[in-house]
Length: 118
Image (cartoon, rainbow, N blue to C red; front, side, top):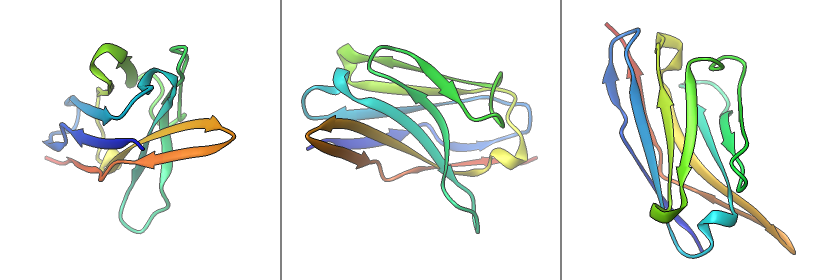
């Protein structure tokens, strides 16, 4: 069992930056692929960024070049650095942990609100 707790959300002006953190409890954090999703009001949840256990990253086209993700396995933490924020980045951001061990293990955090507005 893995519990995920996000932090770092808030209100920021367009063009600003925020860094989200997601701390995982439980063992074997380094074996999980970690994802960041977001969900804006009235829209489906979308995948924003992924970092694999090996450190490979991928991003949605809408955030490429503006967002980065990293992980610190010693701290059981994954980060989402968001730069050049736009109003359309406004959403609840969720941390997700996935690993396949005979079956898919899939865990979610409670989400953190990011609002980009002047």
